[in-house]
Amino acid sequence: MPQLSIIIPCYYNELNIPTTSEELIENEQNFPEGTTFQYVMVDDGSKDNTWEELQKFKAKYPEKVKLIKLSGNFGSYNAILAGMQHATGDCNVIISADLQDPISLMPKMFAHWQKGIQLVMGNREDREDPFLSKVFANTFQFLIRKYALPNLPKGGFDYVLFDKKLKEEVLAMDEKNSNSLYLFIWLKYEYITIPYKRLERKAGKSRWTMKKKIKLFVDSFVAFSFAPIRIITVSGFILGAVAILYALFILYNRFVGNIAVEGWTAMMLVFLFVSAFQMVAIGILGEYLWRTLDASRKRPNFVVDKVE
Image 1 (cartoon, helix red, strand yellow):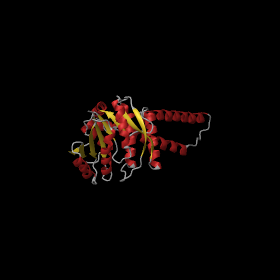
Image 2: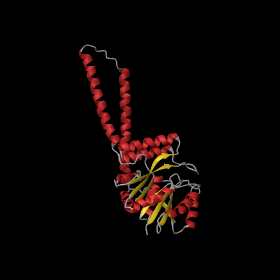
Image 3: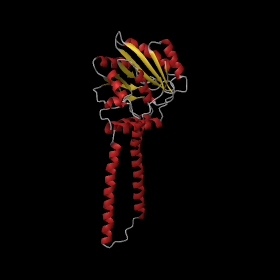
Image 4: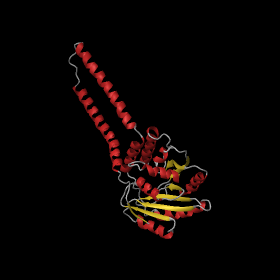
């Protein structure tokens, strides 16, 4: 009998857990007979009553539910890794705790896995999000697909089912400051996408702030692409060529007798521009170097406080 492990990172989800847990249990009847379930719920350092609500779920279904409480907030992608470490299923699903990803899609994903597909993604065709969130998300996905992971499905994904083998390969990488879901794409296994519309959050307030989104973008870009370094190199060559042309222009004017070449303002603008470019370049290189240092320290991605 195959076992499906459903991994759910939770952060300030006290209002979502009761409804989500009920729908998860109801959804079991849509799977083939004999399928068993494991719910791996990870509390990512919530300061509300998320843990207490998870314990209520555990009390109702002690054989099915496994709870992991992290010592603090390590981020949703590290919480996912914590859940993957404790999942024991033949295949695994990652889904959000707020029901923005439809639970009803899960049996279809599972059916593809039974046919031998090791990676099945819920592909967001549309989303019921604020306008600015949509713009940021679409820009994020476009840049990642163009410069980092060309095989990333258009629209991106957070809702994914994957085989136990893929789970073990991702955990073995033990990457720091990375997008753990994109590691499945990097493995380059064949995958199937199932389109869906991401729903509006019905309860609670999202803690997915702009600061966290920007960090995810930087982490994803630096982890999977060298394009920023290549841009620095190309820009350096272009600026060098411009500098040579400007120097030739100055020399020409001196030789033909037009010694009074006006250019104090232009020179200062060029100086400030090149200085700003150098600072940005140093910052980009620093991002790559910092991640190398962070990986060499071998600190854990998360710290588990308790497991129930």
